[in-house]
Image 1 (cartoon, rainbow, N blue to C red):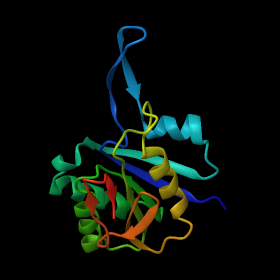
Image 2 (cartoon, rainbow, N blue to C red):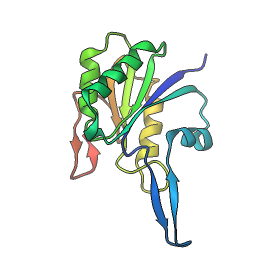
Image 3 (cartoon, rainbow, N blue to C red):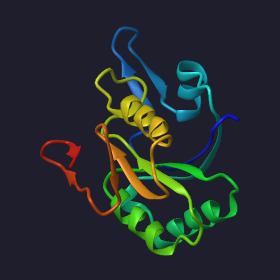
Length: 167
């Protein structure tokens, strides 16, 4: 039986859609770094997935109502593997909220990036996304944060803004 993962998008840098200036052609172009397109066109995974776009916010703008809506979506789904893409500024706060309020036994992994997934060769997004998806195989039930090649309990990690990594 194939593994199924429910991807819930909350916004943040990992999925950034914006305009950029193409210096070669001297025009604006739209950068579509959506996870949907990345999985479909690049990864072509051997697992089933479902994607829900819950909000598109800088994580500093995520409210208690947004977190409550996230909790409700997680509680309602029959899927046990939940990947949440989230901005890095408040992902620990969201993880703590889920840990304190979740009533069902689920594997929840929250990930993000410092640089968008597509259009930037130095992005950490593809690695963080891939590592997070692969981490479901060995993860225990509970709320985790997956960044920089590590899978951490929600309360064992913090963002180091000087080194641009989670530790």
